[in-house]
Length: 115
Length: 109
View 1 (cartoon, one colour):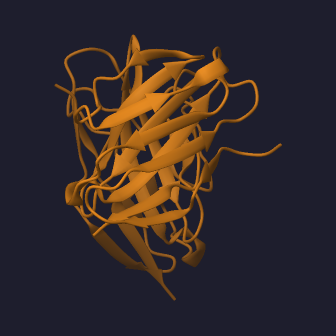
View 2 (cartoon, chains in turn blue, brown):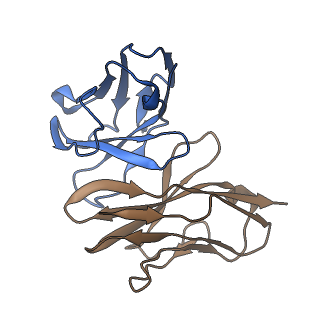
């Protein structure tokens, strides 16, 4: 079974540009999460989808970040316009609707560098 | 507010030595604690969770609510244990995980 996939693996953009990250969860997983790790800091929660609905977006840093999950399958996270402090590794995770609430399966991450 | 503290950024031990990676948490409700591990060039993966009370790859962790700790232990470290270890806190009603800053474990031959 394929795990969580993320695209691209690495993105380098200039300040002010737009970047869109994509996450494909494990098939059948209703829960999808976005996290990020800024250099030297801990992994921080951004938001949580249940199917296509945003269940919890309390971790979104500001309105430059827009997450979508149309159709309840893959998700995108758009940063527009990107700032230097947005650099970091963005992780996506997914989990089943039932069973252990917190057995989240992580993707490999997208490393975003804003110059 | 929830918080997870891992006081050591780096822990270096020799093969065969005991290992203890420290984790303390702050949470007013009933916590669920996890250890995630990231080996070199691999993705973050769940190592163990406190509700399972199981031993994975020789690692164990006991939740101590009095000391608000969830330290990860292994009696005899192996070189393949070298990795980044993250302690994470979950809470009732909210599936988001709160992570500590991580501890890099280096097991030397």
